[in-house]
Image 1 (spheres, rainbow, N blue to C red):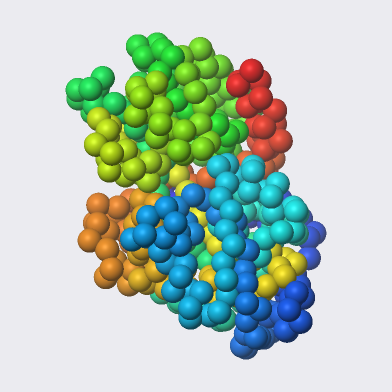
Image 2 (cartoon, helix red, strand yellow):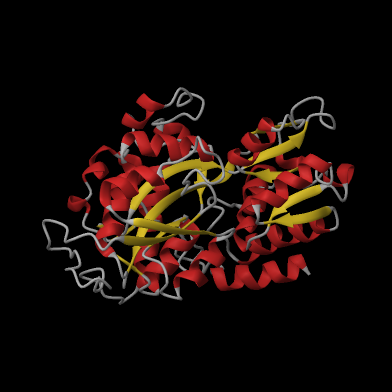
Length: 393
């Protein structure tokens, strides 16, 4: 099933999930007293001098972690906006942090974006105020996780798959299936790792789509009670073999360096870090496919520094900067122009809409089944959260 079809169906579900929430006209008032950009504005106001950003690790680098990795300093020099950044480990953490009102900008994955929109924590954006937006791949724009009823709520950052990380000393031949963390997890009991978030239930659903087709799963984020229970049962069975659930990427790096973990789900950036330390690890995209992410830069509905926020969205989507940021994290960039500054775009299948369609991008599960079914009700995210607590024990 093509990604475009999935997105169209999910957009309808997203609109239902948002319900009667009004489309916000602007970004709130600026703490510095300058005019905040609105949907009707045709230019930005005066920069406030600072911006507070909430993001995944590796998305806002200022040279502190590696002097050679810095795309923040250039932004500060160009705009006069000093960046204060905080990282988070899961989408649930990001959603909770955004409720504090302390952040102007957030880089949110698809399992957080609709919750942020529905709660009124993020504002619609006027993409005309973001020149870099024009170059973003069309298949990343106006998708279920970054827009509602044709109204954009942010700027796509990059996209990628959740990969299978393995110890090459233990697996002398690369695994080809997720069965090494599910049906065959017992072979490395106690050294299997999994991502610590309710959205990981979708990873089990992807596996079941291929290995139990009689369940009829068409979308891992649209699970009826029977399908959902099958995924939960698989994860409860896996639980006895999991040595550690991770959300802090540094902890997964350490676990694979020490050998405490030898196989599990990961991000490319983690493998990049392990490779830099000559760890005996590698990654693969298994034959069943994978969940993944297409992150969106969003602006808080009551951002104290909306002009600097808009400036950041334009900066991070600009080709050279987007190439740096997505290349460092280990994901495909958001535009072809960014590939002029990277030598690995082919490896990430950048711009390949067909390849991108094979990734099941994180999407908030809602009762209205996003696979198009209307004869059943799907299990919503609150139930995913409850089930995850039971799985983790």
